[in-house]
Image 1 (cartoon, helix red, strand yellow):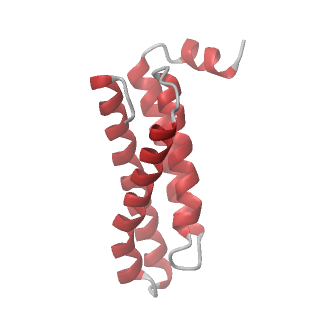
Image 2: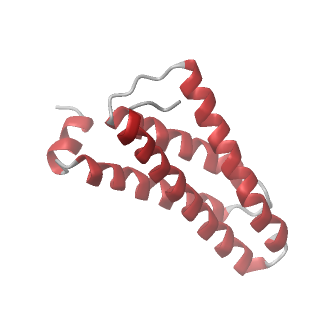
Length: 128
């Protein structure tokens, strides 16, 4: 029995499995943003986490990946990087609070992206 089967056995409801995927990715993104020292470098650590989250959500809905889906996922991830740019600019030089705010922004942006993907997959079953 693989990990995916165990995950489904442990959490039989799809919505709860999606919540677990999104919350885990958000925690990882927040941790990555909180520990980065160089302003702007958190985007490099957060982008793969968000892409992995979207991949796991698509797998949860049995959606195959196409070139268009990969491109749209990367564009959405780039959009979240631009959204976080404002927080990075303002709080770049504030030692402790800057890291905390960047982590909070990363968590909230990843949560929003994850739930938007779930809503899109529930409504029409496609990523694009």
